[in-house]
Length: 123
Image (cartoon, rainbow, N blue to C red):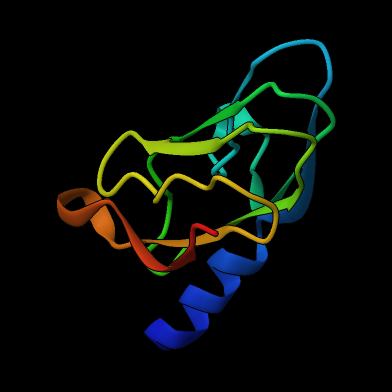
């Protein structure tokens, strides 16, 4: 079995999902699932944030589990003057999103570099 096949097999074993977060009753903090056994091998591949009031969102992104793992955070709907902040355990924190249409795409590049923000739009 080649290394390429093992990488594909490992990546396919995870449950990739889109997680939708909404704020209504106050500032919200959320710890993303990155595929560890404590996450039941679930990975929040895409996180969509919808805010319905002036409350902000803080998302914590723990270390990834395989090289090239990605997490896309999208600020879909803004209700007022809120922000979305993504902080990482290791690596780059995402650029703060301040309006609907903002996004940050992060990629796990190992224990030394951690999460690296590949692309963003703060809006």
